[in-house]
Image (cartoon, rainbow, N blue to C red; front, side):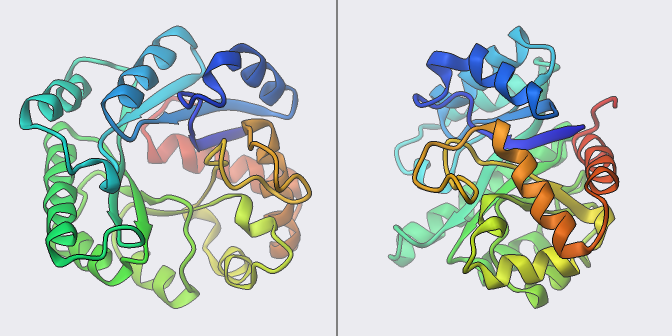
Amino acid sequence: MLFDTHCHLNSEDLYPRIDQVIADAKKTGVKKFLVVGYNKETSLLAIKIANKYNNCYAAIGFHPTEIFDVSEDEYNKVINLAKTENKVVAIGEIGLDYHWCKEDEQKNLQKKWFIKQIDFANEVGLPISIHNRESTKDCVEILKEHLPQHGFVMHCFSESVEIMNEILKLPNSYIALGGTVTFTNAKTPKEVAEEVPLDRLLIETDSPYLTPHPFRGTKNEPKYLCLVSEEIARLKNMSKKHLEDVIYKNSCRAFNINE
């Protein structure tokens, strides 16, 4: 069994044919999907999808590149749905992204919203899904100072084994690996896959992005999650079934979902 712990079935690439996407994924062993929002529209659609499909769950929140034009009223209307919508199991994806935002003023605003959403997740008792791009030092510092009390997932982890070990010192922390671990030139993700403790590992597609080898260049889908688990099992020198069984249980535990 597989659990795609980060996918965007709410994207314009996948939502128009969502029934087929889910059906195709089921054929490859995907049993559950966490549909992740990143702004108002995608968070609301994630909830809609989760309420329609029994095997789908929602994460809602504001991505670091989406916070610059968000009003307090808009934010509150979205984020407070976590208090009333039972299928919302996480706040995300939230975090920091300095790739596009390089000015100190932009970075400081991202930090403010990241902390704000961590505090809210702590208030409502939910874990968080973290986006981190070219901002690791600040991201780790914030996590240490504003500890997500109900756990967190480092979505699409791309940092070193040393950074991974620093993060895993924090309680209820998980490392999520996706399609990049299958790339032939992906030295660092493969090293992380080899070293990450099995009980702290999740897998994801981030579909429609980061399509695994050998389908790079096409739109990613949850049906390709099996390629991620296959490569990690190879790197860890263990059976694919054992790896998937453990990771599925990890995923349900991380998001407080009944297996």
